[in-house]
Length: 459
Image (cartoon, rainbow, N blue to C red; front, side):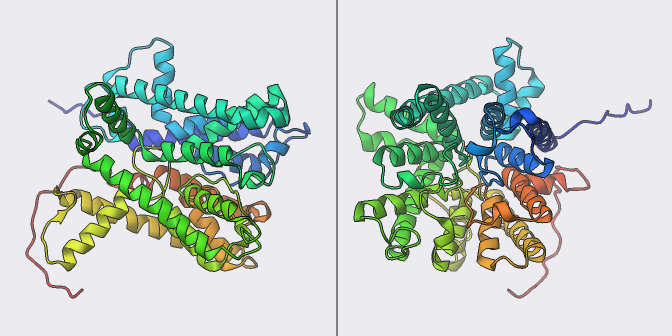
């Protein structure tokens, strides 16, 4: 008997890429309509495409001022794309199916499993439901807190809309706002604005897996009367690692910015001591793929800009709304280096052995991200030869890390420069591993079980 040929089937990564591409294409068409612009004259397609990409990829780089250029319709389209892009096309589609009362089929469950790296198919829909419910609750609380600032400034109707938009954008780490070209700069020393925005950014960047672990720990403390240390000790290695590394990066980065920018009049030199502390902490947090700016990024010292590039490269944590190579990946590689230096065969982390498969995946992520960064920076240098190198480097790191901070060159980019940044944002949101799988011509994910004779090379 002849074997029946299999029909063409898209892989999970291809479905995700196609989903984002369709979302961006649809958004760009809507944003190019006259009804989407505030003046009713329409928007050039390259700017509409750029805005659709930065919204869907939750980056935040913009070629036009969001709060001034777009009408309410245009802003609504952007908000929907931010929410879909932040949660992911797969989970958002699952959410819509659940609302419509549709049954989630096995194929869709497998898609969710592969998209989020779950170990089992059991309880996937319940997990997605919890994730979406938690997202809506956090965004609603953030919007209510923002209203205490925005309603007195804009009035009730616009104040509510700006609060909702900012809350969704902050939680999804998009960095887009409706406050004009100055972004968060007027609120650089405002305690409520700083705390709410940083809180939303950090919560979104921690990842949904850490949420569940923290919720379970809190439940043990409240309901079971368990001690705080004992409850935290029962958290997963992943959650402990994410929380520790996140704290070190936030407070370590804030200290460095406080020292480097203390006397810089172009950024925080003219602020009070309290204002400098707020600005340093906010800068460290927003560089973790959020993109809001409370100080002028164009005025940063070169050392501060390089530090910013490092933080943008690392990004947030797996399973959340943030980009970058992820905190866990960098930590894993750091411990692999320590294991090699100390002569250990195994990579040990938290009194556990990390599999070589995870280590190699981390190496792959880092090297591919570096490759895309070098390629993007080189391409930008070729087409934007008049722009200072540090500005180009900052822009490229921001795009690939889906951060959204700029040293002031985004609006003046050429068409070629905008297309490079669009591609960088798209690659950055999908991740280097996804792009590598898409570009794999064989399309095979089967493991090859073979071992060749040792070959000696010098390292």
